[in-house]
Length: 290
Image (cartoon, rainbow, N blue to C red; front, top):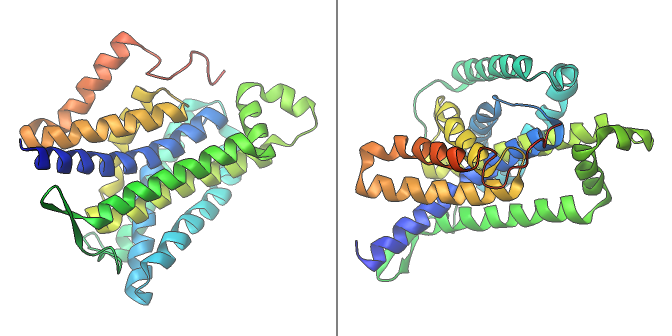
């Protein structure tokens, strides 16, 4: 492997890891703050990609889709949480069964609306070319994905750490009973958390569309790797989602280069090793959801 090839593979790993981080961050936010296991997360990721496809086909504006799709997915989360999930808080098996059902319904609706063939989304204007890196060409759009992910990470951190609502969210994840005793309505806070988490899945779908294509099974394929990231990083841990997302992205990229047949297996091997050494994950805390 030449130095130029190594840099390209590292950047490929970062761009894929960025998608995994956005998805895993949404999952970790929902589980860590709400104690909700959401197996429909991949379906919302897929739906975000299809909304992007429709917006681009009708308006030609990817930038409109970048704003609109996460907002629409987030609003959908604001409907689903009080309607279906609120009464199941803490009942993990029921949550799993319900969110699997929601995922199947969304997948069938997508198939009826858009069909099941693979679609492509053109790269947005200005990001549809490559730049030179160490003598080789590298797609500018992949660097854009990394930059958007970094911006989303900073925005999420500022929201959770520097705002009063973020303070209530963090306090509620640790001691919901005390927060309620102070007269605060946690149901509204959890509603906001679920909307943000689902909106992040929609954002990941928007970014993935031009890079990975749009098809009905895309949510099922990536949600498995996303849960691996959450488990390796630690359930409910946002720092864990960052580190594990980038780690898994690099591992998949390098394995695909050297041994493509092992690319789908190696993530589970890494997960098994991490859990053997540290059962709670790299940044997980025992009893986080208690």
